[in-house]
Amino acid sequence: MTILKHLIYKEWVKTRWFASIALLLNLGVLVYIFMSLRSSFLSAGGVTYLSALLTYKTQFFSIYRYIPLGIALLVGISQFAPEITDKRIKLALHLPLHNLRIIYTMVVYGFVLLALCMIPGILIFTGLISIYLPAEITLPVLQTMLPWLLGGFCAYFLIAMIAMEPVWKFRFLYLLVSYKVLSLFFMHLPIGNAVSLLPVLCLVTCLSSIAPVYTSYRFNKGQL
Amino acid sequence: MTSATKIIRLFLVLLGVTVLAMTLPDLYRKNFEERPVKKLIYYSEISKNFMISEEFSDTLTHESNTVYYDQTGKQYTEREYNRQLPFLYTRKLALLGELPDSVNGVKFDQQLVKSTKRGMLMPVSSFNFQLNPLFESESGKVRPEQPDDLFRINRHGIEFLNPETNRILPEKSRLFNEALETAGFQAPARDIYGIPSTLKARDDGYFIIDNEGELFHLKMVKDKPYCRHIEKDITVSSMKCMVPGDLYAYIYDDRQQLHILRTDYSIKPLPIRPGNGRFVYSVNCFYKSYKNTDNDSIRLYVLNADYDLEDYHAMENDSYAKSSVAQIEQYLFPLKIMITPGYAHLIPLFNPPGRFIWLNLFLMLVLAGIKIRHHRNLRDPFNWLDLAIAGAFGIFGFIAVLIFPNRK
Image 1: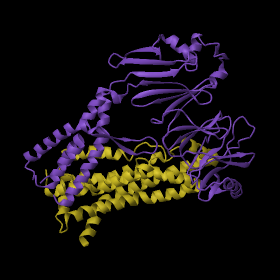
Image 2: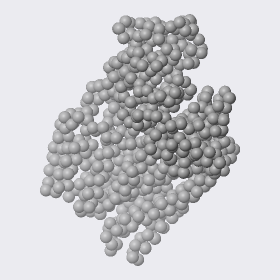
Image 3: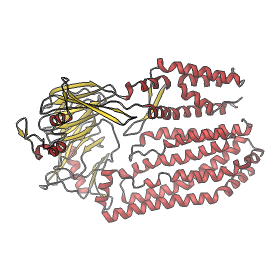
Image 4: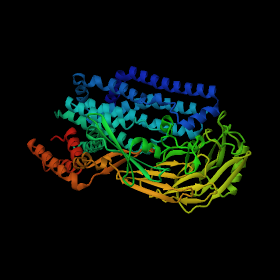
């Protein structure tokens, strides 16, 4: 248990500043979106603003699209880049714990950190926009943003998978596959139309969460 | 590798197959597709013939040549062709001073040209906010005015919402709820169809499918609710409401058959083959034409004022699916995965197995050769699964298996 605590502390030391930036970035962008919404709502009047929103299906929150991906890159790279530089992860893998446990302590730590960076902001944002927008608009807005959030989690798991891969040739190939997988999460779909894709995106995210097992095994066994 | 790791690898291979099936056929088509002959067909109100144009172009020299003819095979020059279609080439004919004085005895003027309506009908379901403005239908103004509230129909019935305060207006909601209940409406609404825009000459309200699948017409007349149940013997799949005219809406039933809902609330099936359900329509005071284009053919239906079939012409379509490049694609790839418009779905489109099986078998043998050369244990069932994936998914499986290698 002490080893795990130390391991988590090591992860915290690596990621704390980047996670803080990610948290601020997430909150900043969401507050900015809310302020723009509030300003447009008050200046145009509720009826005019909502009519325009309903007619043109304006994605007033579109600036948020790549923020979860950016957060995943910040957390993922800050966590795994030091490990793959000079193969420092080998030190952690020599601890008297099962390697899978060590790897997944790192991955679950990153996942929780990512969730802590994104979810509170989204909850606050939902509460704030609900002051001005009815549920018929708030829910589709969240449904449209959900693929982007899932994309952030999926990106993090794929970063972990790529980081653990010992061979550069395969890292490059996984990068190509990851790019195509992530493009599914960030398609430019009209508001509300992504809801039918959510089960597939959840499945892909779950699948990507176990992907680091495969590459960490290869790393551990030195399967070049 | 442990069995758990091997199973995880298999999932990754299948993810790789999915990604490749979405990417490679698209990449292939973008690089090798030859531009098909561009065919256009219209119905001439002048000669009452189907007018056809075919554009042949060379992508290398950027030269193109268009031929014009009618359904009987009679050839036309471009100017003669344009003169046969005055509603389509009005501006061009006006510039050349070749506009007709009258068409079928009716004076050809701006009013007649403006009466032409063109648009697209698609049975694709797409997201709609179930929140709409209910306009005053008899305001006496030139155009409907934006109301101060929006309505929704949830399990509590109809609710009018004040957007300024995001609160429900209880009195108006009660008044309209009573009207809906009297008409036999069962909340909540499954779908609400209408034109929630002020850019129309008159408001016809909304057509609402209730929880039992019944169709209702709701509008507001002099601040009072007007609600009527519409008798029908079809299952409504989707609707497209029209700006004021002789019909309220087009209706697609569950078999993608197109119907019209007239202003007297009668529903009439159109004498049009369902096909893929996508139509480009053009309506003027003489005829209503509906053009359906699919992979094999272009079909143009001409209906009279009563929506009965007046004339019909079908011709072969020179689409990508028929080209030699597309035929080769079927030998290379076992499937392609596409994303649907409207609500996004991943749809796998399989090619005929008789075509791609040979490449699949070849790649399976190559993979077996690679495994033998690298001294893989062929008693390991996971190696056999790799071969099965290459056999089933061909080039996608072959590449995916090599991207995620199964070491000893």
